[in-house]
Image (cartoon, rainbow, N blue to C red; front, top):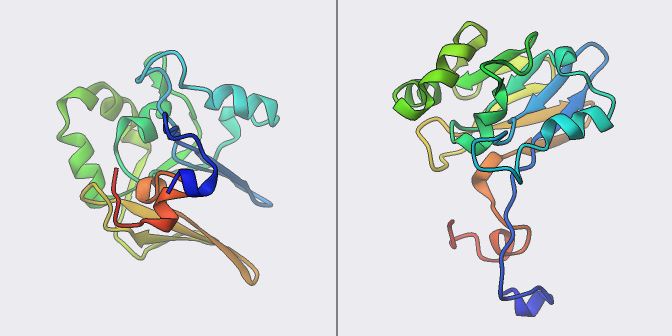
Length: 173
C-alpha cells in the first residue's frame, strides 16, 4: 500500500493531531496530545496554540475522544490544569475507564472538577454532537461539528494513517 502511493516503506509516521475550532463565543479543543507523557519530541500543543495566538486560558471546552495518554496528557501541565477555564467533555464509560487506570491517578485528580460526562449521541455545545465510535476504548467518541450546511467528524484514533487507514480499513494499529 505504501509503495503504491509513493511513500517510504522503511518507516511509518503516526501522530496525534488535536484540533482547535473557534466560534463567535467559544474556543473548542478536541483532544490535547501527550504533553511530556511520551518523551521530549511530543507535547507541542502549547507552542502551536501560541503561534496561532490562542491563550490556553481562552479555551472554553475540551472534547476528549478517548482516555489514552496521547490524547489526555496535555490536560495537565506542572500538576495543574493546562486549560484552567475549560469544561472537559468525556463520554461516561470513557471517564469510568480513565478513573480506573492507576497510572492516570494524578491527571484524574487534577481534571475531576472540570469534567462533564455525557452519553453517546449527546448534543454538547452548539454545533457539537457526540458520536459513539466503537473504537479501541470503552467510550471512544467522535464529535460531529456542524456550522450551517457544513460538517466535520473528528474521530480521534479511529484512523491512524492517511493512506493505510483509508485504503485498508481492516488493518488496525
